[in-house]
Length: 176
Image (cartoon, rainbow, N blue to C red; front, side):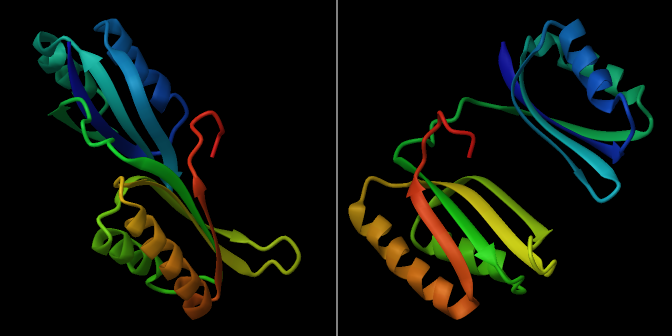
């Protein structure tokens, strides 16, 4: 068995997830990790599967039958990049243009790896005005100085961008 990443997307329709997972199951493939989300009118599936590599060409041919969908498949290997401490970073505040770039530039500068990042705009409960959210799972090297630098920069981001940030240890047993 080898690992493959499948990215499938197309105009959202009922049954899309069923169709793709059916093709994987028919080949005795296993879905290990996935993210599926509707963005605009498109539904996107990002799926890590394990599959006998001799069957990948059969899967590609099966997916071509769904002419309303586009897909890519890439072989990958097990992740060996999870050395360090995981933290959760949550930002909420006014929608500032470039805020994602601003935060990710800081993470990169501090040698912090992003394991998962999600953004969305939601209306504030009381006023209905748009609020921007970032939720990121970060992998920080075993160097307390980096964590301290990030915490110092969080205060600066909160003041400069008029946002609130919560930063804490990641607990995989919680649904962050």
